Length: 414
Ligand SMILES: Cc1ncc(COP(=O)(O)O)c(C=O)c1O
Image (tube, rainbow, N blue to C red; front, side):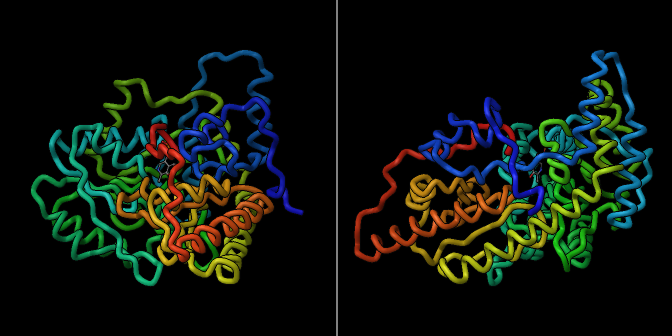
């Protein structure tokens, strides 16, 4: 038995993922296995919990900062895990990855400029661009036999537009699970440099990498022209509500400017819980992460087999990293509201693909960071409902999508 087979009880907690109000809003019912919000149903590693208890047990919360300790811990981690040499002096701490991206967009572009993102895209990217008063420029990824590739021709055209000065890269990619290869990133960097576009590389998922794949940070390729949001412990260690975002660039001018803005807003020092839990995570959480990855790989393998044997109409994109699984339900004939209704009716709380790309009406994203037994049970119920829906469709029955699934992504995370 794995420690990841057990999820802590959630009595009285107000986690977004499990909140009945959100579940009702998204799925039309709260009777679902929540496989949507991209956090974990697992307990954090013991050293993190022990550190948080130590801090709480002191019973005093005096001003206490230790960014240097965090930067040292991040740098050591990235050297060991990814063979990436970071200069701790080039890291800036801000309260979250989205905060970092929102600030960088404002530093790098003017209101009315375009900022490119590749779709399907983590749905907050669109919001972070538009709420900054910039225009969303979309470059669709190419779906090649269920896997995804960057469309370099499209990127070349769209990044050449005079008003596009920045793009957001998601590496590894949420939701399609690609871990971009070095040669792909080199090609992207070449295009971006040719058009003087700065890449904001969101690397929050960089530590969840499966066997046979290797994470390449943009900072290993061209840290002088681009910037990474590197080293957030959120996804790696399940510290979603207590983590920061760490920005890294070797572009001294951008670094100075960004630091100045962040300091002027008093954003750079974090709080003691986040600071010391982050250090504990990077210094003492490695064995836990290795075990987590092995567990997730087992879950991916189970889903792959299950779909092949029981639901062959659904295709899973190869999962190279992240704990998100991207499923193509096109061959089931169900799309849009019908597909959403089937999710709600079967209690399969996956995220509709339209959150990530308005055209992805036949896709869903499944968060697999939950005990395997929960995942298996949810998939079995989903299969029964999908079989019935497909059968009804074959018989010419009217669409089932009558339950109001208000799938607007109203929350500000996930
Ligand atoms: C790609 C990506 N970036 C950023 C975030 C959110 O990061 P933060 O909570 O630090 O703002 C998520 C959360 O799911 C994500 O998947």
